[in-house]
Image 1 (tube, rainbow, N blue to C red):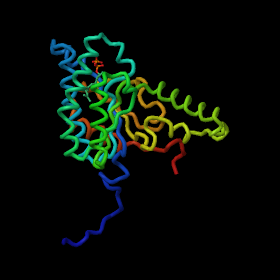
Image 2: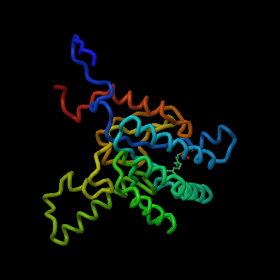
Image 3: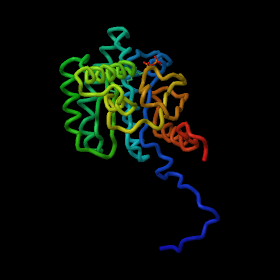
Image 4: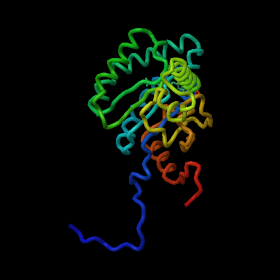
Length: 251
Ligand code: FPP
C-alpha cells in the first residue's frame, strides 16, 4: 500500500456523502416536443421517454443516489386527449411487464405515489405486484408518481387530520409539520434534496410541493427523451456546488 501523502489542506471529498443528494426528484418534460421536432406522433416521444427512465435509474444507482422519484403522470394529465391518455396507460402497462424483472435484478424497490385507483384494474394489479415483488430491495428506492397532484395530496392529509381530531384521537393543537408529513404519500421517506426539471421549463407543476420545500432546483435544457447519465451527472455536479442552509444563516 502506498504511503499516505501529506496534504496542504483538507478538502471535502468530491463524491462524499455530503455532496451526493440522498433523494432526487425529476419532472420528466419534453416528450411531446421531442416527437414534434421529428414529425412523429407524441406517443413516440413517450416511448423514447421510457428509455430515458431506464437510463436515469441506472445513472442514479451508479451515482449512489438512494431515492429517486419520477413524475410520470400528473392528476392533470387525465385532461389530455383520450388517445394520448390511452397511449400513456398502454406504455405504463407495457413498462410494468417488461421492466419489473430488471428492477428486481438491480435491487430497485418500486413504490407508487398518487391516485392509482383512477387506473384500469389490470394496471392496479400490476402495480401492486410490482411493489410487493420488489419490497425487499434496498439499492435504490424508486417512487413513480402516477395520477399525482401535490395539492390533492396535502388536502387528503388535512382531511385525515381533521377526521382523527373529530374522532378525538388527535389534539388539534398538536398538529405540526411532522403530523402533516406523516399523512402524505411520502410518509417515512426523506424529502428530495434535488429536484430536476427537463425541457427548459421552470415550474413545479403541482409536484411534491410540501416535500420540496428546501430542495435545490435544477432546470436542464434537454428534452426528456434525450436524457441520460451525462445530464444526471451534470445535475448532481450543480447540486454539489450549491450551498444549502435550510433557512439558517451561514455559520
Ligand atoms: C412530459 O412530456 C411527459 C409526460 C407527461 C409523461 C412522462 C412519461 C414517460 C417519461 C414515459 C413513461 C414512463 C414510465 C414510468 C412508463 P410532455 O408530453 O408534457 O412534453 P411536451 O411538454 O413537450 O408536450
